[in-house]
Length: 330
Image (cartoon, rainbow, N blue to C red):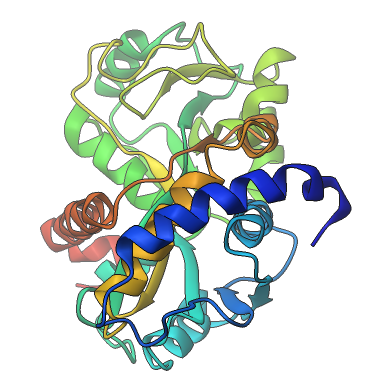
């Protein structure tokens, strides 16, 4: 257990013990779960934003349950390798998946995966939520979202938008913006949003949607112009930037991270994890750690994550089904 957590670990663990006892039932595979370390698979290489929030969540959960939660990075195939390993893992509560909006998008747009997300994975809890923000190049002659949409409608196909790759969450969020706004733009895919920034800053590409934590420094320095965040509420990091709905467009696309378990994991174990995560994410230190990197601690119920998963799956699948050419298909 990390030294900095020891002081608060005792009090958190005492509270969690009573919470766990309330959920203990004969259906549990163990009466003392967890009695050994828990593996938390992140289906991406170490060092990215998802990996960073996973490590904060893992340390916080470790303190509550009294067992080490070990982050294991298992990248490859757009996250499918790590996801498949949990979909096929023993459903004993000791193998969990830490994923994000990206996982749902991948499942929604890719027909041939070795797993069925809705069938093979059980929702546990939403861990974090963070706002994407629409930015435009400083050379674009628009001060706000209304002016930008008017500019695009007056010049169909003239302006382009960047994405982190074809079929990614960023790409489909931008395609949904086009549909909602009724505008035509040219898609320019990159290997990640960071790779697109030189062209955004130089004005060669007009627009991109990206995470608030990444773009806040560029916005504050005046290197790009923020038009709106895509969540239902404003971002604390950018309090002066309106939501899409406030700016006049009926559009909402949140980005989030969550924990899933193999589908056959007993419900009592899911309930114990759900309560433990909620306790962990209410720790002021954890809230601050996440806030410092521009994300919000959530700690939802498994039912709330299930509803979000199904809504997001339907949303992204619907975007692609309306136009298969988005993925290079005819």
